[in-house]
Image (tube, rainbow, N blue to C red):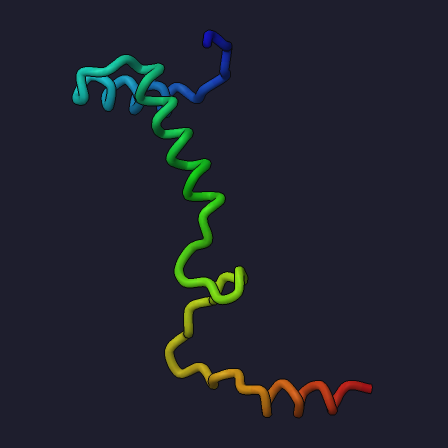
Length: 77
């Protein structure tokens, strides 16, 4: 399918470089890159539990336990 897009010059140059290295057309390379970006955007990053993405644990962070959640909930006005 043919369409018109406004692409920054540096992005177009990078796409042309990839296309030349892979012996493919610029359109094929751009389509693959866009498809990859859309798929990774829809996929949950990291682990998920019950459909909810889990956040990474920061070093030195206190774990969130049901007891902590209950304590914080009870402190609400």
